[in-house]
Image (cartoon, rainbow over all chains, first blue to last red; front, side, top):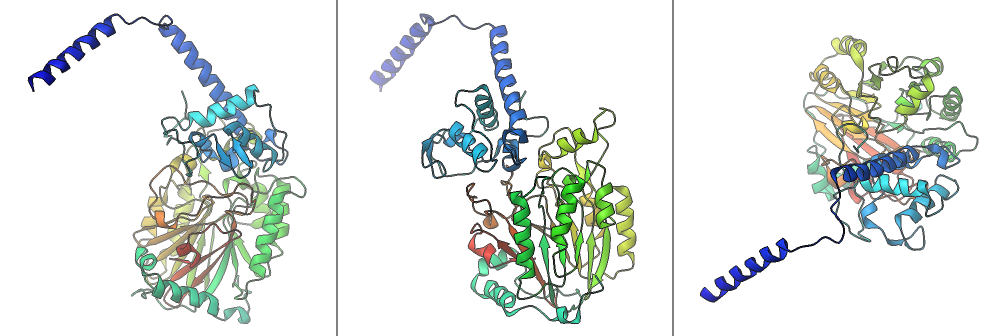
Length: 152
Length: 338
């Protein structure tokens, strides 16, 4: 018992020492930088929100939000996975494009387009905190929202 | 409604009757779950058994040859083809998508192909472009009641929202656009409003407590998920007015899904749409065992369907969800008791 206690003390001491000598790979961000970066994300999420509800992505009036209110059932935590409709392992962006092309009868977006990134950002943000689970066979609701758009 | 023929007076088909028995005998868990079990309701007066059909939430767009047009056509053909002909059809709102005259006219043209009479209430998608003017012009009053074979039927407009547009200077198109979003966080909660509550009080005043009552609203008469207006603001007042009745069956559209709840004497059932299914909201379901299966986004008819509701002599209700694709759990396929 004495021995193990001593070892524990030694490890704790080492831990304290290592913490005190920790150096950062890059300088800590200032509060302003963090705020600016968060705003940049929120702006993209808001752009995604607007696109998500915009029937103009398709040609038959339908928008993503017709079937996915608050981003629900888009299951961003389960991608990449094999998706039957895609016939391959795809990413969420592939699936959004499939939805634009098939149920919405529109033109798919470039995979690296600002629009598709914004749509992905919106859907993912509405599922923040949901455990990443590639290929998990579940339909997950968005984070419950009491009021407002669902993001800051 | 008074033109329902003698021929339609005939009772339930053997098919529906068999479904009722099947549930009662072979699926005791499902039966007991809803706490009814086919036992007659002491105090509810006997009625002549009959059935009616329900369609809802077509969300027609003003686009020619749109896929939702074909689904509504299919739904109407399905109801017209029922071997056990319904006495009438109820339509639960959201015939159009953006409240346009063309959408409502297209919907009316399709619904007019029904071979039995139908009664209809508005949904928010029918309403907020012109505050229901076109809708009323085509279909008449937004609330109504009638008696049929001993049952009192009530329909009400449950999607009335406090004016949020005037102060913000929104155009009718902008107002409608916001209401087209299920999660419209700028719109607020809706309800039936004071005038309809007064009308309802007067409507049921002279009815005895043993009168079987069926009420249809676009939104549920219970707090399901207010964020998506899966609620009716003055549902507590409505439930209070209807409390004197032995049993009330409440049916509602808007949710585009199978859902059931019972509050006191009110047995509520949600309906399938003929446009798209909504996912279940992020709340604990009162009856998760009847949750419908996940929908295949590649099958444009999955999650959609029609309904046939049969009422027995003791006012035991049975909803047969007639899904166009195989999305229902086995217990719901056998019918949902109300």
